[in-house]
Structures are given as structure tokens and as C-alpha cells.
Length: 323
Image (tube, rainbow, N blue to C red):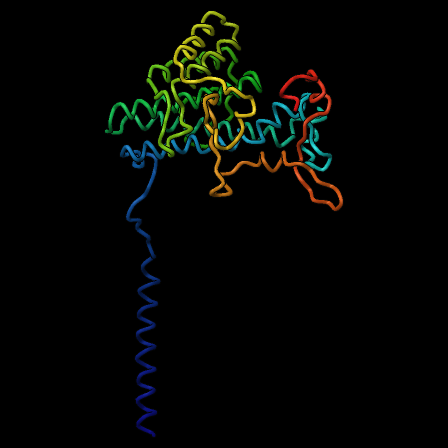
């Protein structure tokens, strides 16, 4: 028993010595973490796959403004639709035209627009140096210019003069950028769309993963609309004629055929932001917001948005759309 006690004490002594030495070494030598790799902007644009990922990232953010945010800001305070009183204070303000600059809908729309523009700017800066198929590279650059022009078109129509930023934002030091006159913003929009038009984007896409990307018809159509906004009637007519002569689009025989899911991205759709029900983050809240509101016999809830009765009544009695 005594011998066992002596051995035990020796082991305790030995463990204490090892622990002391370990602590001494660790105190004298600071831990330093050496990363094996770092993914930054300089080394993340290396291949054609990286370029595709980058343009997908620009498209991805379109959902942040082309769902309900766009409808709220463009239609809610008009005579087409309104919001239930409990549909949200900010939206009710817009519906009643009592909003101020503190309304969060404006900040959200504005911020998301510039996030899209920054992603496009980063792509346009970095993709040209990638060694890849030149036709594919030109198409991706054309798509990015189309998307940047589209968002600036939305911004200048909403706010007039806005900051014109065509390079990536690299720090938070010089972000208080002055507003650029609308004429200069429109000039950049036209420049981007002309260059996108020259990129000879596909007339249409057939692969499921490609549908929804910018087409040559989308570029020409938006450019025609920009010319119309500027009252440049000659160029607007010429560009619209190119779209018509391209024979890529036509009207459905029946107006109601535009809307069924089976006709999604159909013959009348020139450019449509794509949503999906596979993941909730990819979905649109429009179906929920416009769902019929049931209140009898028990409260069943429903959508917050509804058509104005006066708007519905404004159609002629025999107008097919009124049904």
C-alpha cells in the first residue's frame, strides 16, 4: 500500500512538471493562425464558372425589388389598388399619400437597387480579365450592362437625380456621393443598353436554368422605352420596330391566357424576374398579398392588397377584362 502511494505521488509530480513546461511554452509563444487560403475579389474571378456565378448573383437580387416593393411604390398610391388598414403602417402611409422620407419602403428599394448595381460593377471590372470563351464572356458582360441600365432606369424614374456609380464600392470612406443630374444618368443608361445590344444576346433561352436571362429583345425593348421617356420619338420607333420585326413575341389569342402557370415566360413575356417555390427565400409574396380575404363565418385572413372598386368600375360594361 505504501509503495503504491509513493508511485502515485511520483506520477502526480511528473504530470505537474509536464503541465508547467507546456504552460511556459504556450505563454512565451503567442498563437498565430495561418490561413491556408483566402477568397477575395482579386482571386475569385478565375474561370468561366466564376463569371457565371457572378452574373447569377446580379440576377438573384432582382427579386428584392420586383416583387411587392415595386408595386407598393408604383401603384399603391394611385387609383388601382389599396391596402387593408392593418396591412402595415408604412404601406398605409403610401396608400394615403401621407408618407415622409422616413418611410422604410423607400430606403429598402433604394438600398437594394444599389446593391444590384454594385454587383454588376464588380462583374464588369473583373470578368474581362478571365480567360474563357469570348462569346460567352461578351454575353455575360452584355447581361450585366443590361441589368445595370435597367436598375438605373428604375432609380431615375423614381427619384430624378441619383448618384451615378459605375465602379465597385471598395470602402465606407467615400460613400457620400453627390446626386448626378438625370440627363447624365440617362446618357449612361443608353450607353449601357447600346453596348448590351451590340453583345448579340440570344433571342431566347430553352434550358430551364437559363430562362429568365436577358435577351436581345429585352435589351431593345427597354432601350425603346428609355427613348420614349426622353421623348426621342425617332429612336424609340426605330428600336421598337426592331423588336417587332424580330418576331420573337406575339399576343395570346385570349387575354386570360397570359396568367396560367403553364404559360409562364410565354409569348408575351419580354423580360420576367424569376421566382420559385422550391425555397421560401426564392419565392414571391405577391400571391399571398393578393389572396382573397375571407372573413365569414370565421376570420380566415387573406391578402393585404386589393383592387380599388372605382378602378374596377372604370372599365366599360362589355370590356372582357372586367370579368
